[in-house]
Length: 333
Ligand SMILES: Nc1ncnc2c1ncn2[C@@H]1O[C@H](COP(=O)(O)OP(=O)(O)O)[C@@H](O)[C@H]1O
Ligand SMILES: [Mg+2]
Image (cartoon, rainbow, N blue to C red; front, top):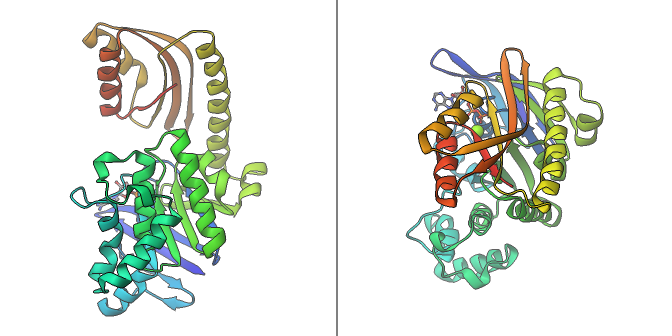
């Protein structure tokens, strides 16, 4: 069991975590969901003490970890693996050597390392690719290396920070299935951060919803989806439902021959329409706006547009980069 009690964390004068308490039962998959900037990563990093809270306590199996000495912290961290959105693999090490790294740092013999790494390669189904380098792998494969590396030191807790956020839908499904398998077969407790409701719904047992440094509600996953209590959770759910609807419509557009559909999501300061107009002018291309929606809640605007890009493929890539550099999330349909 991981217990967070009244965690507060400030950066300069700005509170990132505003007094969060949570119980994460052993052996569960616990989702933390919220928008960018809500404080999810900071909270997660308090669990392995990459971040030191200003006040509050974190306990693992009833052992408080906030004031551990660095030698005790090293022991604790062997129990806790972590994976990231951008994988954080070492580009000059092949798959095998990336996975072996934590064991090398622990000073294990190469015989022991070999046995353990080979077992992990089998578990994540990458035996065939053990000599490949990160640049030779797909995103999903890189994340499988990340998972193997995170668990190679016999961790029983896995922290996942947006682990599927830069993967395509297929790779996302594969990674979520792998996490589920790890949880069920090895009993590993998984704390999973995501900004996508679908990801949380597909594998989590419990969900905590974070907004602006607060946990606004937490519950079993079915209750969160059937009976959301907080306005923010309700808004997240509405958006997910709308998106599913739009994606279904756009799939039928694609099958009837309409091409180059882009699904753009924006939030906060990004104003989408001016960016689209600017892109059209700057790159001499056109857009058909097919569908869109904007919601404002507590002065925070969130929305999406479905647009058809009219121009050649080279310009399409340039425009997609331009959108991404301007904080729009772009999904190509
Ligand atoms: N190392 C840091 N220094 C200063 N501010 C930070 C740092 N890390 C996070 N923050 C701020 O704390 C808030 C929460 O950030 P974060 O935990 O990364 O949120 P999330 O993971 O939900 O996107 C944000 O306002 C962010 O700008
Ligand atoms: Mg984050």
